[in-house]
Length: 384
Image (tube, rainbow, N blue to C red; front, side):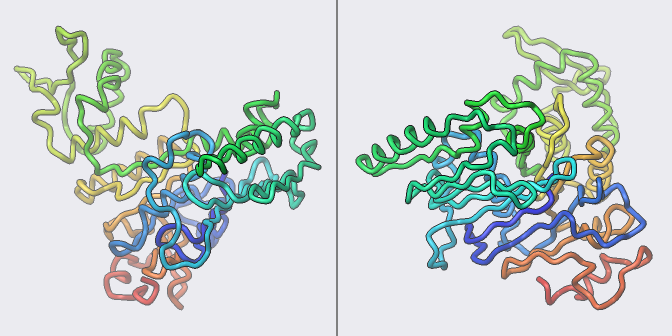
């Protein structure tokens, strides 16, 4: 699991900002927000333009680093506009079966790395200084990668960097990515653990409605399976949308979803925006064959009544008990010890600082405190 994440000089975060999943406060309620001693369900509040979406983009940067070849086309400006520093720094601390694994890198822009480092239990496994072409690979045996021919990597990288200097372009291949792709590693090795965790990370803005004809045609077709259609139907009913669904194949071979009445009613043409948003949430988050490792749900309840948002949170906890879920919201009805707890409710300030509610007041917060009322009355205002 992810134990800690930090980023610096990224978009609106000039100074370092950290999410510490190990910063639990020992509360004896809402224990389903904690997994193996780490926070697994976390909610972030913050005024508009404080950077909640940017924080999600930062924590997801590792997935683009490993798996995307086109990040420069859509990630926009990377560095903080008011900083004199020329790199953004990312640090991921994992706990894999009691071993502390720290993976860090710095990047000049969306496609060019300055440095990369992997440490396991304070031992430096490898370290790369790309501009100066200095590499340290002395302890690869600690991650079962002693057979790696690092000379091939260095030669390929030097050749690519020389070519980039002539073409004034750059695209650095991270060594960890190269290692996984070019060395026969055990599935439980540290590099494979990191890549496996990153591969199953996901970010979504649940309130954003996509074009159903383009984005969910495959999902539509899959609902021909009665079990999958029933799972979606059960989800909607659990969210408070009382309905029965029917699937039919159209003449063009694709599927169509309907509300079941005496006459079939086309689903997407007649469903409310909130219901469509729920289906989009289900498709992108719950319609999976394996449990994700981390979900960043930005503004996840934008179209929901507060009771529906409550239902979504409870469903997430039940469906993904071990997944680390970070939710951003403006809905203060969810700021309750019944669903969450003060060490799992954070405020993101205008200055780019994260503060848990339990650290944002001199009071000793207990289960009986009305956190929403305290928030509205300005108890935590100085941390906004």
